[in-house]
Length: 135
Image 1 (cartoon, rainbow, N blue to C red):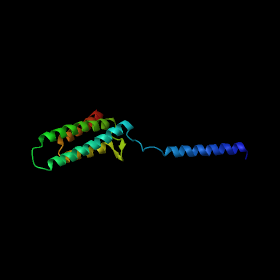
Image 2 (image 1 turned 45 degrees about the vertical axis):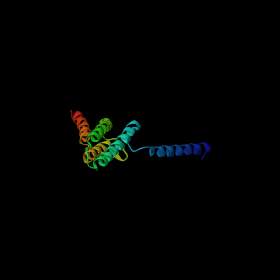
Image 3 (image 1 turned 90 degrees about the vertical axis):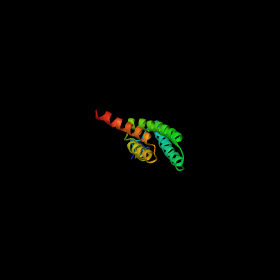
Image 4 (image 1 turned 120 degrees about the vertical axis):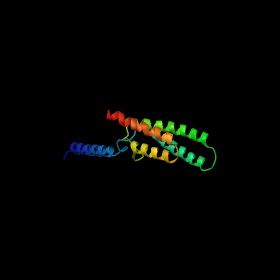
């Protein structure tokens, strides 16, 4: 073999190796884009926090209507943020789960901790996308 043939084969082998190595890099599709992943991160964290505070507030007797109203409003706003990502693509994956599954879990969590208005807002937003895509 000539030197140029060996060089061409070496370059071809290296190029093939780089292509194959590059193909394995990056997130598993269809990952949520960075901007939506940031929204998902904030929304899931805020829902968990709102539920935790709700449990803490209601653990003791007394009139908690004002605190619960504030928590309900905050969680509803967060639900709209989560729904905005869901409306873009419920099949996107974030932290190993689809956005659709995250929305379902968010609805269940909000209902379980007593933030039913926020759960209903999130559920309505999810149902709204389903009915729009059926048209």
